[in-house]
Length: 194
Image 1 (cartoon, rainbow, N blue to C red):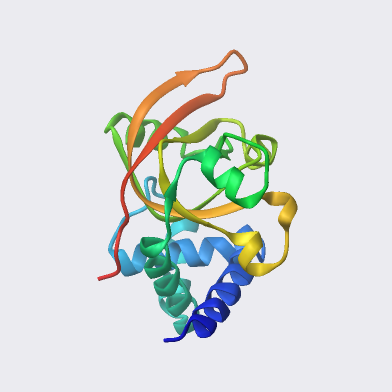
Image 2 (cartoon, rainbow, N blue to C red; image 1 turned 90 degrees about the horizontal axis):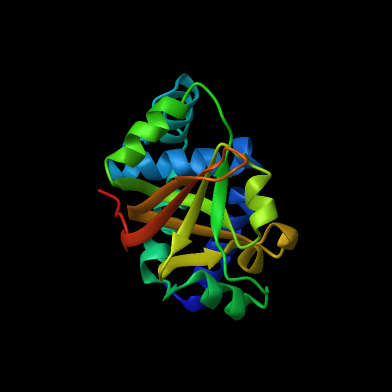
C-alpha cells in the first residue's frame, strides 16, 4: 500500500475519531478492544453497547484495525517531544475522566499496576484534558507512540488530541487538593489485533 493511500486512510480514520466522543472515538476504541480481545478497564452497559455496535460495523472495525497497525509503526516520544514536533508548547499529555458509577472499578483496575487501552485519546493541553472530567487525570510519562489526530485530519486543532494506545504500567497514584486522582502511566507495549 502506497504512502498516499496510507495518508488517506489515516486522515479518514482521524476525521471519524474526531467526530465527537459518542459518534467517533468511542466506537473506534470499542472496535479496537474487540479486535485485540482486550476488556475495558471497567464494566458498564454503555461499554458493552459500543462493543456490540462496533463489531457489527465493518467500516468501524476496518478503521480501528488500521489505527492499531499505524500506531505500532509511529515513533515514540515524550509529551515534550510530541509538543515540539507539533509546534504546541507543552510538556504534558493526558486525559481527564469524569466521576460516575465506575469510579470504584477504575480505582481497582489502577491498583493492579497495569492498564491496557488498545486505543485512546489524550491531549497535549491539560485544560482540554480536564474538560473531559476531573475525577481521574491520566498523565503519560516517558516515551509513547501516538499520532496527532488534528494534523492528520486537518480539524479540531484546538483539542491537541493524540491518538495513543497500548499497555501501560501505573507508576504513581496521588490525590491533589481538589480531589482529582492523578495517575501517572508509563507506556510498555502496543496491543495488536488478533
